[in-house]
Image 1 (spheres, rainbow over the protein chains, first blue to last red):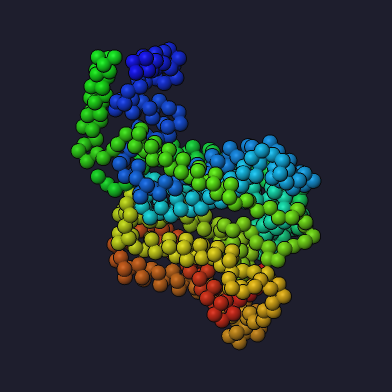
Image 2 (image 1 turned 135 degrees about the horizontal axis):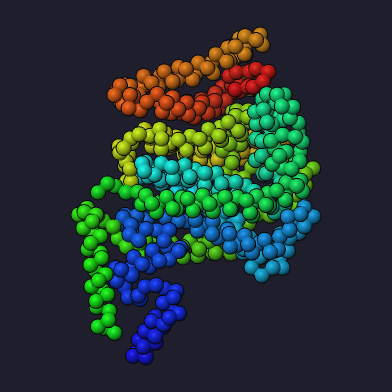
Length: 256
Length: 269
């Protein structure tokens, strides 16, 4: 096996390797630290963590799973975007096209939808776990607030995506789900004190969201853009804040 | 090769010792690589595998093309909003769909600021923070989750209640026996009925806040209340009473078919 050791040495000591990985290859405490601090993805973590933070019994791994679900929906979502047109004439046909003609189309769509549901469940369980361990207590109060914003964004991501298949399930779930916009006090045409601003069915809070009096072509385009661009961008920003704060404050745990 | 690695290892060990010294004897930290990264990697692989198998086995739903002129019965929101849709049975849409969700979001956000109990930070326990946990169980499990289960599984055509063994019959006749509380108590005049209802709603919050104040004093003592502060207490009691109001209206509706406790030309509660 001498040639193997030689090859390994040649590779790991080559200028190319060293330009990418700025630390040695051996399993030393120094390299373990550099492995995390010198890697843009891993340095979301501190280089050392409290021992119990690595235990699944403590964390349930739910925050991580929520993020994983987000990544799954990003990857599968980009694949779906290649074949989907957010126009009422084509949207439903494109779903059938995905199902019957595209390689892996149906699996990608299934995974996108189940991961979206999974993300909602995982984020609830994550919140439940964080409450049980009291991890929102000082100094992590504000990160809990960021977490609540992310919870709302998760629901909005899932809700805007619900409309895109443009089937009966989609338009009626979105119609029922946004009827509350119609009932907003002052701003909705069915809400209390609607007379104050003179709102009407095509000029109120829900019409602003829908781009019209009811779910239609403008709504599909709006929800598509919100779902694929705006909300994912905002979510990514808040995710960055959420993770960075965990890194600064450390994982919660019993006092030493 | 062997001679070049040994000094590096020794140097590495020195680094670790100095960190430990700096943090004191109680330090229980381990290296993120490999301890945490390994757990995350395993978790990722297992969940990904599960997701792929699940997606191969179960197809996402796709119904017939959208038809704005054919409303399905029942029309349901996505499952995670069905708790709110179920609350529409007890409250008008402006409350169930707008005020209540806003209160839920704000209420969740202020949790770290109204909870001043220093105990229970970073470990599982019940004894140290009984009331916080019970409130959360009440809001999350009893209200949010069970209302979603009811809205998803037990509500059929016309949003009528169907047990799992009953057929969803769209022609089922439901007697409309709902009655407003002021009417039930004998108020026939519109004005006095509204005044009574308004007094009842305001009274609920005033009496509720006073009762909660007395209860906290009895449970925790005057010293705790001073530490907690009026702002935190009022915020907590307002949110808690709103949560309680949902339960009260559920019971009124289910047990005695009472719909509104207050009726005015502008809003009903």
